[in-house]
Amino acid sequence: MPPPPTALITDPTAIAGTLTAIIAALFWVSGVARIQRLFEVIPVVLLAYFLPTIATAVRLIPPQSPAYDWITQYMLTLALFLLMVTVDLRSVVRLGPMALIMMLAGSLGIMIGAPLVLILFGPALPPDAWKGIAALAGSWIGGSANMVAVAESVGTPDALFGPMIIVDTIVGYGWMAILLFLSAWQSRFDRWNHARTGAIEETNRHLAELDAHRVPLDLRSTGLIVLGGFAAATLAVAIGQRLPELGNPKIISHTTWTVLLVVTVGLILSLTPMRRLEERGASRIGYAALYLMMAAIGAQADLRAVLEAPVFLLVGVVWIGIHVGTLLIVARLIRAPLFFVATGSMANVGGTASAPVVATMYHPAMAPVGLLMAVLGYVVGTYAGLGLAWFLGQIAT
Image (tube, rainbow, N blue to C red):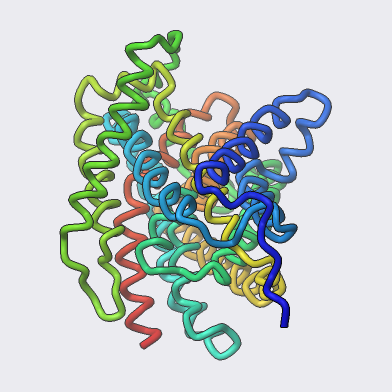
C-alpha cells in the first residue's frame, strides 16, 4: 500500500503562517460591503474552523503538527486572559435582579439539559460523547473560548468537536431566529404572564453606562496588551504544567489549571485600572487570538466527522428545549417580561455577539443589558462548564 500523500506545507512556522493568513483573509472579506450579508448567515467563527479543515483535506497542510498544539495552548490562554481582564464586573453587578436571575436560569437550563440528553441519547452516541456534550455546554454557557477551554480540559476528540461546532451554529442560530420572530409577540406574552415590565426601566436606571470611549492603539498600549498578555499566558501555562492532574475520568488536567489561573487572575485584575486597556481594544485582540486557535483546532479535524452531525443535531434541539422550558418556568414564577427570557437565553447560547442583537429587537435602547448579561456568561461559563464536565464524566462511567 503506498504511503499517504504528504502535505504541501509541513514546516511548523509556515503552517502557523498559513493559518494566520486564512484568519486575516476572513477578517478582510467579512468587511466587504457587497458580501457582508453572507456573514450574517455563516458566522466568521464557523469559517475559521472549517476552512483549515478543508485545507487539511486537500493536503495543503498536514492533520498533525507541533504548530497546532502550540497555537491551541497559548492562544487559548492569551484569549481568556484578555477577555477576563476587560470584563466590567461592576456594571454586571449593577444589572437588575430580574436580569441576573433570568441569565442564571438560562445557564441552569443548559446544565440540567446536558446530563438528560446524555442519558436519553447515550445508546446512539459514541462512548466518549460526554466530552463533546461538555464542550458544547461550555459554549452555551460562556461562549467559544469556554467551549475550547472545556474541550481541551477533558480531551474532546477532534471527531466529536467538529459535530459540536455544527450543532452550536445551526441550533444556536436557529433558536436566535425564533427569538427574533417572537419579539413581535412580547406584548401578548407579557399580558399572559402578568409581567412586571417596570423591571426593564429599573434595570436601565441601574445599568452603569458602558465605556464606549475608544482611543487609538499606540505603541505603549500594544506592548501592554500583546506582550504583557502573552507573558501572562506563558506564566500560566508554566504553572499549570506543574500542578497535579485530578479526577477519574480526568477533569482537572494541566490545561484546566492553566484555564482556571488565567480566568481567576484576569477577573481579579479587571477590578484594577488594567481594565481600561479595553479602551485600546484589548478584548478585540483576545478575539483575534481565539479565532486563530479555532483555526488550529479545525486543521486537525476530519471532514467525515460531519456525518455524525444529524444525531447530535437532535441532541441539540432537545437540549435547547430543556433550556427554554427552564427559562419559561422561572419567568412565570418571577413574572419576567419576554425581553428577559429572550435576552437571558441568548446571553447563554449566543454570547456577546448575539445577545445585544436580540435585546435591541425587543427594546432598542437595551443593547447594553444584553451585552452585560452575556459578559456574565463569560464569567461563570468556565467554572460551571468544568463542573458540569466532571458530572457528565461520572454519568458516562
